[in-house]
Length: 483
Ligand code: NAP
Image 1 (cartoon, helix red, strand yellow):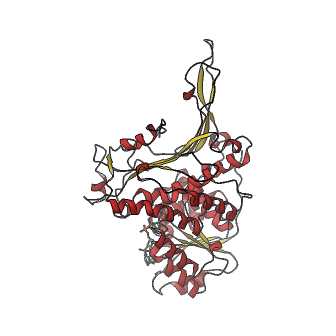
Image 2 (cartoon, protein in one colour; image 1 turned 90 degrees about the horizontal axis):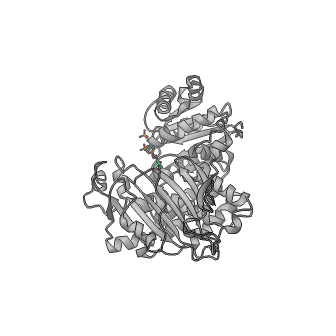
Image 3 (tube, protein in one colour; image 1 turned 180 degrees about the vertical axis):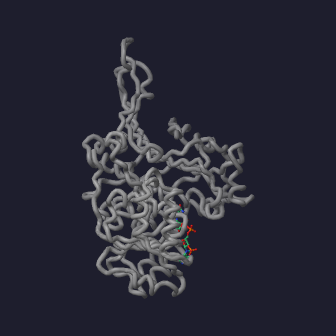
């Protein structure tokens, strides 16, 4: 099957923080892949903007090097790289000063899509928004893209939303959660709402529980100072795991339209129950042969910040009453693996001999590695020897099913193209972010009030023993964390 690329309109994309880590590691290499896929119309331009003094050629060289360092196979396409960097410009600009703004204003064109990626610290969002307007660079059609962290609690998220709202309508604001740009996440919606098979079973009558795991092998080396003020709850659960939970649990939207989908997600967050303290396990990785302890990495010998979280959540509505949602995320775990597992109930009665509890349908949605889905079904073990049952995965991995030509864009590429198209479906709305913080804040405040001390766990393990017990004591078990 040949990949189908939907063209976008000609655009000017300004990347504030265009010399930063995110721009060099993800945004520009991703845009190069879209360029190679024929999705960047001729005449479109990417304008890097940061304080460092450099000219267009200096920036082009920086991006050549970034593609060489962070790109995939496509980095061998030297002709392609040259054509791509020819579309780059650079403006030295200070978000908090006046230098560079007149130059940027002169560079922008009126007859193309204008998008502004705020790939800078959130403390600069207000200054950028204000100057974009003061210099007449942004208008009511322009789009802005903002990155996590979107606040560190409800109060700061509200303040950020209010700052952006002074200059931009909600329809112009694209809050990125790159988990939503993953192929599998969108495929989850296709599987749920594009098939007759799943939706009738998608409720507490047929589903025993749901597990969402985002496991990493890396520690916090290099970003310990930032992470130590954040922890797994703020860094992963409030945004990424919450978004996955919403897509799994939401009611079918009446259309696949940005606000209709986001309305349904918001209802899920609002229906989340407060979490009982004994339904949460916080962990911190210990020193091991694989590396230093969390506290050494974070350079904070008295840190109580969690690098691991496991929790049991409930959604108080008719569809999900009684169905536990188990969330788990952590660093320095045994494998890099993200999975949503929908575990269906046991058969009420079996006509076969043997242990029926073993034979359960499980829909596994893998976000990494090997994005894809499989459905565990029970069949007869092939061959003679009577009626023995065995579980086999029905593989729905689209990479293989669609063939080698179908190279899926990565999350950043897809999301940036959605910004240019003006499609907000896969971006978080301001009220969603605030609702997520409203649920998260009391949990964090509870830990702080109790001086909660995280449990130590071995690097390379599946987290603290207590996290296992969270499920074991209910006769369930976590899915293995497999790379
Ligand atoms: P970074 O490497 O520190 O880059 C910051 C960028 O902002 C640089 O280009 C810097 O260039 C520019 N900058 C700083 N102060 C400025 C000012 N006053 N005016 C104009 N430009 C200014 O940070 P990053 O890792 O790329 O992260 C950028 C944002 O994305 C942050 O909010 C971060 O939390 C978020 N994020 C990053 C990642 C990631 O993987 N890196 C992932 C998710 C979210 P100059 O110093 O030359 O001005």
